[in-house]
Structures are given as structure tokens and as C-alpha cells.
Amino acid sequence: MNSNSEKRIIVAGFGGQGVLFLGTTLSEAAIIEGKNTTWIPSYGAEMRGGSANCFVTISNNEIASPVFDEADFGVFLSRAAIDKFENVVTKGGLALVNSSMTGERLLRDDIEYIMEPLSDLAARSKEKMLLNIMALGLLIRKTGILTKESVIKALEKVSSAKKPEFLKFNIESFEAGYNLVKAVQSKTLEKIGC
Image (cartoon, rainbow, N blue to C red; front, side):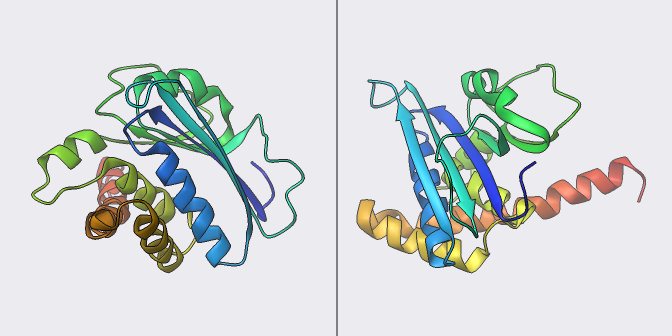
């Protein structure tokens, strides 16, 4: 992985899953914390259903290039996304995977995985949960790359610019994803007999 001062994140899925919104929110939260950041979006011609991904770099120092070949963290919201970009996650990195969309597959043994059925959890929730923001909460809690407070402030800013009516759902979804880490850690401890 990169030095402690610079973290690279790839977020990938398909159009309509909020991939670019997640990346924008990460960058905005970094700015709120006084960090340097870059955000490079990429998407297919289709508005919904085509591929979508973005590359985000967060650093305490100047960022030499916004383009990278290796990421410390990957957030994969679809099967096509993990199939295409899993190899970008560097040895010792973390892949956060929406297991609702990936099915059974071989996993690398040199990175950590968090496999959560985010689409299923969002669909079953009583509130309108947003899987991309649940993934954001999970990423922030697991990695600590940004503070919870700065991400909530970023959600307020980005939501008000895009769709203010979604702010409540964004914050609730972030909290749900953030709290999933407790459940993931509990499951891990049960498996090893603690």
C-alpha cells in the first residue's frame, strides 16, 4: 500500500448505483479536512446500466498525478466492477464488495475482503437506504481515511447541490453502513471462537 499520507480508492459499479456521487463525497470530505484530493470519473455512454467508476486520491501532501494503477481500497458494487478492477487493489489492500451482485467467485489471498449484501440490505430496509452511501459508511469505519463528521458534512454539501430531498436518506444510509462494521467484526470474532 501507499504511504500513510496518500490513499487511493477505486469505486466501481454501473450507472444508477451512485458510484460517482460516492467518489465526489469522498473528495469533498477530504477538502473539509484540509487534505488534497483528486477525483477522476469514468462512465459509459448510457445513463443507467453502463459501467461507471471513479478514481479518488486523498493525501496530506501534494498529489503528483491523479492517475494511478494501484489502489489501496476498492469499492465494488457490481460483478462486472470487481471482475474488471479487483486486480487494481494492491497487495495488502482492501476490497469492499456488494456481494448481492457478485455471486460465488474466487478471491485473491493477498488482500482483505469485506463482502456485504448491500443491495439486499438496502432493498429490505424500512427506510430508503442507498447502497452506495452504505458502502461509503462501511469504508470510512473500516479504514479511518476520513472522519465520520467530515463525511456527514460532505454529504450535506453534495446532497444539497444534487438532490436535497435525499439528504435524510444519505445520512441514514451512511450510519447504517458505518454500523455494519460492528456486525462484520462480530461475525469474524465468532468464526475464530472469541
